[in-house]
Each structure stands twice: as C-alpha cells, then as structure tokens.
Length: 326
Image (cartoon, rainbow, N blue to C red):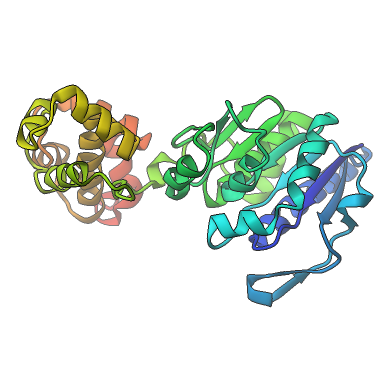
C-alpha cells in the first residue's frame, strides 16, 4: 500500500487538491474491478483542521494534520493561487514537514505553480523543475538556483517531480500512476479522464510577451526595437552599434536582464508574431515566414518547431478554425 499525502496549503487551487485525490482513488476502483487490492491510501494533509480557499468560498477539512503523518510515500504539493511570494509566505509551516518527509525517503511532486512552494524548501536547488510557462520568469527570479525546463510537461530528478501549467498536472499524475502500477493501468486512467497520456510539451500553449521586469534601460530600448522590426533581419552587431554598447557587453547585459540571448529573444518575438498570424489569418507558410523576416523555409520551420513543439502546419491546424476547415 502506497500512502499519498496531498497537502492543503493556504491560497491553493481547490481543483489541484481534488484532482489528485480523484485520480488515485479512481485507480483504486480500477484495481478493485480487476479483482486486485487497492494500492493507494490517500490523505488530505494540512497545518490546521479547516482551511479556507478561493476567498472563503470553499473550506477544506484535511484528513490529517501535519503532526499526525509520521511518514508517507508520496507528497503532492498542489498549485498555489494569487501572488506567489505571499502564497509561499503563508505556507512556511509546511516547508519543514515537506523536507522532513523527503529526508525520510518520500517522493515529492508539485503541480503547476505548486513548484514555488516546493522550491522554497531548497530541495530543488541545483535540480531541474517544470512550472507554468506564464510564471517561469518570476520563478527564476525567486529561485535562481533552480533550473526551469521551459515547455516541459513533466520533470523528474532525485525523487522530486514537477509539472507544467494548468491541466498539465494531469500528465504528471498519470506518470506517477504508471510508475506505481503499470502502463496498462495508466492508459486506463488516461482514457477515463480523457487525458493525452503522452503529451510532453506545453510549448504550443505558451505566449511570449518579452521579459521587461528589469531595470536595464538600454536593454528595454533594444527589446522595443526588436519588436518594432519584427519583419526585418536583425543582427547582434546591429543592435550593439545602435545602442552604443560593445557586443560582448551588450550580449551579457541582455542575457542577464531577459534570461534569453539576443538571438533567442529575436527568434521568440518573431515566432510569437508568426503564431498570431497562423491563428488569425489564412496566410500560407511562406507568407507568414516573409512577414516575420525569414527567407529560409527550413530555418523557419526548425525554429518554429523548437519554440512551439509543433510544425507550422500542425500549429495552424490546431489553433485556426478557418485553416482547419480548408
């Protein structure tokens, strides 16, 4: 029997508590129907007897308090809600308990932006981690010693698991079901919950708006220039000369401010423009490619797939109803 402790933090997403409970409980039912004993003992665990969520609209009463759980096999850290710094601060009582369980041999899994609470324990330092694409930059600023794996759905390292954004945590739950049971049971669960079991990337859903939460005025001017010149070919030398900064210094400052190299940033801005065009127009691949300043079809396709995880055609068919109908 595997004990699964689902934490109930303050300022957490109620569905990210209910869904893992539902998932592991359903697997027990699948096993029962197959004439097998249940595998999971599932608990909701909290720091107090009643925890208000969603501004008091929901009250969760944990099955056990932290002090009642001496050991567990798996700790689930659900997604937080609202201001991440404040949410992490509200839940500092959970940190030593998570660390203690990990040190006793438990595995720990964070769902979506539950990664912020998990990272606050220090257990992720020097390790890789997934989180919601929309919070990746804030996560990097708060936890610079953790390596964020952009676009990943599931990351595993050293008995610690993390998932990408929003419903991506279902892929982590299925991953854990397969780990603890078998592929057949995981596939059954994926069909029951209508989840694509082998989805590995959240890149197709990510939106890039540029990292401008920094104080380097020259870099911000360069970012604005790149965004205005999305239809032109821009080089690092051109930018460095335009803003009167040595190339090496410019590249260093740009990377430090945006967490992207200059060329990575240029590509991301151009690919974001290409994505919007594929979503909202009937333009073909070549037209969109020229609109965002590329002349090499192979290079454009390669970069687009690297950024989104999909080919231009697959992306257009996925997100553009007009194109899909043609």
